[in-house]
Length: 444
Image (cartoon, rainbow, N blue to C red; front, side, top):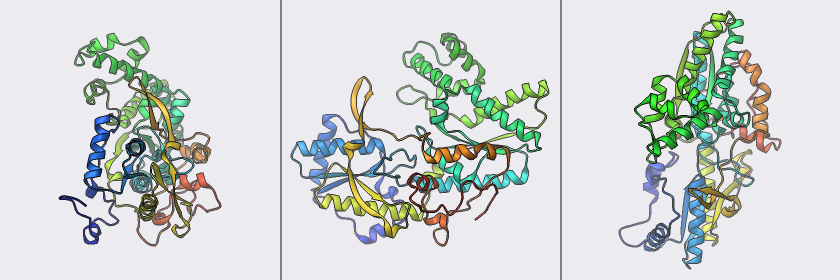
């Protein structure tokens, strides 16, 4: 390489091998779409005398890869651009990309934490644990963790949106579970929810949109709760007024640089606990609820995305790296590195590539039509969700807790096997060695 840059040597890379490696590379969320941004990217790549540029990331990063590949080609620049699927959210997937790397690791780490809480829950028998898990736009992580651990209930945002659940509908569902379990002497349980759930609850979504408009336009003083309430439409006003003052201020003060509510920062688990407490108090006064309820909130966030990678993800990333290098060497550009047969042992995997443009669609963003890679949401007609839907009512009633234990690197199926959702989606005869529907607590 030219100038002050040099090639990485084996000794330097050994320090990061099988650790994830992003503390070596660093990460960013910059969007490359303007002419000056593409010119700057081209200049850096040319100065470094690169033959290929590998872009590692989710839907936005790989949209950048597709745009850069087209730009380089049109400008006669030799550099090939290849994308690699990386996101713990699991929302970069299609017929050619079964799973993104990072998802397996995050789900196993979260499932261990949830399993630990379940063991305490089954022992203490006096708390309901509300556990919020990463996944803003898609609920793949929550669904996989539910199949791994068997909670009393796991909300799937895509279903909540499709069924047009209101905030009270969500609270009522939880109270029904709590009341029925109390009738059987069970005043404890575990509830899972994705961090983006609040955006999929239809009346909360409308409230958030209205609040964004009011505050971005400077229509009202965000510190004046009464003025904010008065400026809302009747339905949103009713929802806003049912929130405690603390949550009202959380919706108004925690804003992103564009002035919008930072939904991922809202402590939805605590909000649901308060709503359940309020509804159960009404039921107790009416004589229908005779049990006890004590809620504890948790957020499983960065501890999942920063963990040492699972054996599956280590093997997967080596295969993706091989595929990316082969595509660049072969002169391909505008492609995503892919690995197939992931539900089988690694010796049976096959590397390849698929055009990035085949994953893209046109979306209206900021008043303009733009090509983007669409996020893959949980399919309600897909096998993973159908599997969960078939057993969740039973899990709600009984104690089917499952604790998968810590992620081991050797000698354990969970270290090397693919996720349950991937096995269910592919369904090519590969057995699921740990049943996702077993009605017992197992520590393995």
